[in-house]
Amino acid sequence: MKQIPPLKWRVVFSVLLLMCASLAMGQKQQELEAQRKRLQQEIKQINSLLFQTKKEQKSTLGQAEDLQVRIQVRQRLIRVTHQEINWLSKRIVNNERDIERTREELQQLRNDYEQIIRKSYAARAQQNKLLFIFSSENFLQAYKRIQYLKQYANYRKQQGLKIEEKTQLLQSLNSELRQQRQSKESLLSQNNEVKAALEKERQQKDALQLSLKRKAQVYTKQIRAKQKQADALNKAIQKLIQEAIAASNRNAGKKGGNAFALTPEAQALAANFVSNKGRLPWPVDKGVVIQGFGTQPHPVVKTTMIKSNGVTIACPKNSQARSIFKGEVMSILSFKGSNPTVLVRHGNYITAYKNLAEVYVKKGDQVAAKQALGRIFSNPQTGKTTLQFSVFRELKPQNPKTWIYRL
Image (cartoon, rainbow, N blue to C red; front, side):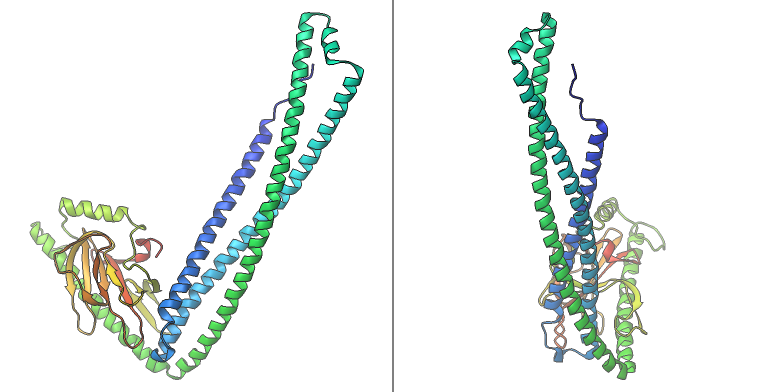
């Protein structure tokens, strides 16, 4: 008596591989979709924070700087959307292949089932089931014939269920394919709109560049003067950190050195600070980074280099600077020509919050994570509200991007 063979393990393994590949592609697409939505939100914030004021309030250089910030984010949005379209195209191709394979399998199942039904009716015409059993030569043969009939009936049932499952799978795949194609068309349309906006902004920037070239020396002088002021403030911050290091060493009975002599409590605080690297909250509730960390060409006047030991964040008017981690207010720096700066110490790490209009804390205060330190200054001429934020490990500046969540 022929028995129904079980599903071979190779088939199961192949199905599992396909499922894993599909899941991985789906996860990648979700990551790209999340990036795209974050960039779209960032553009909205840029429009709100940098382009709500009248252009007459900004210099030509200021207009070009703001425009370059939006252009860079829009370029990133186009790249991410294009990647998402490519992944979606791959999923569509895979889905179409799965549909074709499922159709073939479904047709084969239907053909097999049709043969089973024909054979079943032919067998009924020839002999009755009871006659088939009772005509057995002995009890064992009768028992085996009963089992055979049960298996045969079960096989028919299983084939029917497989046909139903394959039919449902095919319907699901077709529905998913329609959604994927609609999503792809929508993304292509969105990307074309973003490209059109980008081209318009590039034309605006080119027009501003012509004006900037006529007064290149004037703007270069302005940028260098601003950099000189920033360098002076950074030196003052470095001096305060050096004094704090020296004081900690004196208290510990040590001489010299460029590292804090940490108490057990300060060591634990520093270790906790490091363990949260990459997950620390923003120093403002809402904002967008308009200048990054390190030495870089000026975004508009490319021949002039600028240096930043932190990042500059544009935020809404009347925004408050907030501590990114618990710690102690190490110093309040009031430097000539600059707005107040608050330094908060977290063991051997220091965070700096520059360009405050009003300070809420004093030296020696213990502050909690997200506690407001002061109100950020709003420039009445440009309408911008910007916070300069830095992270130091002793005297060495750190890139805030590696510390703050999705900076």
